[in-house]
Length: 153
Length: 446
Image (cartoon, rainbow over all chains, first blue to last red):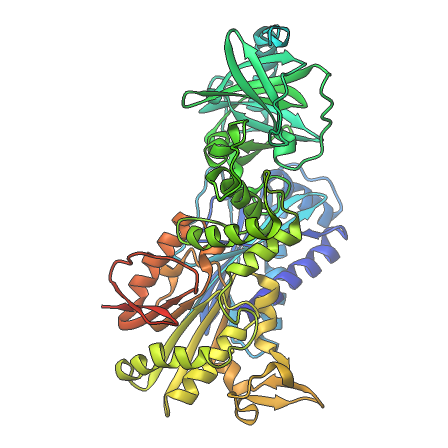
């Protein structure tokens, strides 16, 4: 993972989450996974294209997803209805979008694809041998893992 | 000895009850466990200090309460003594102390002890409070995160969150096979190099300096240990503090680690590596520099290659797993005293102020700095002519390092060169010829 890419993703995640979900955002230490990983229950995938190819995966438990959606909508949501799904999808869009804007300012040409949301147990995500950087984030609503895998062309 | 025999009152009944009540919340907590009897294995959980830990129940022989262990003179500080259980003498180890965790170690209080059996050896582990037996699914266990702190990450089999409580599952077999020597509670008498001291020295260095000592670097650490023993006139178990351990690890480091390389090392390097590369490479030299830190090594290599092979373009991939140092690498700045005389300041640096220089943009553009931990070399979809990976064995377990070497072997072109640390010892590397002169050992891909 090219070092210039690291900060925009980390910073945008923190900025977006702290302004939309909770001001108590705690980032834990970044780490690398050799491959894509098992998912926690609710997963949003945003593709990256342009001078590179890759994807951003935002992963959380069902409970965390509901709590985040509840906070963002300022009402108590209890099941995965359309509102919850589109809220979480939008959150992923905001995080990735901001990072990509930032990278464009630094001179890297990136585009993002529309996010896709998956809900289910025992999902495994596998990428074609791309090393993944994981940004673990602790929120009062629960834990998020943002995995970023980028392959240079 | 007889007064140390403990009442071996087994708490099975209590544990069974707890487990039943426990089965309920586990099945409620995890959607994968619909029924409480569906589990892969069970763990025994206990407290050390304020935290919950657990071990696989299959290693546990029994649980006893005891006090008044028979003390052993001159024993390691985490060995509380020995205990006679139905005729078998077992060592009692204070787990909290072994891992440098805070715990109360008053000798006379009755303590809960988990007796474990590894191979044919029984060991008693003193813990602060045994809590429960928990049935688990493999999928409930997450791999340990490097953030856990406290107990060295390598001793941890995984982490499970149950009922919003985090259990750190210890890899008990690994701990005691690793500390093999430490389980004997008597000390040898001679003060020369002996294995017992050395193993302990290695364990402390590994834990405190956060390095790995393995088959690839043990030989050098043996020498470092001998020097240390002579210097401190070692007569009892070595007890390193953090700074000493760091210092020991620093002694292992190759020449010019963390600074720009200078003569004569650069001359040796040119002689052994670059002359050869010049005959193999065409106009582009592809370099992989793993463990480049904040860039000293990468920029030195770049300057050296450009100076020595005229008209060649150098493309380099420089990687490190330390995010803060690698992030600083693209904006590399030096004071003029840090730039050795062989490097042309005008050619490679921009003068920022009185005394400070910054690397030129053209140079940085040729080097691709990457946050990477070397366990996934296969993911690179390109090949290299030169791989420089000095002292990487310190940062990886033996298995990881072995797979790293295998990965490098598949990514290096025939005739390409691999350079490892000065003190790293590899007897034979498959697919490579070891070329050794007085100053440098390199590996040439055949």
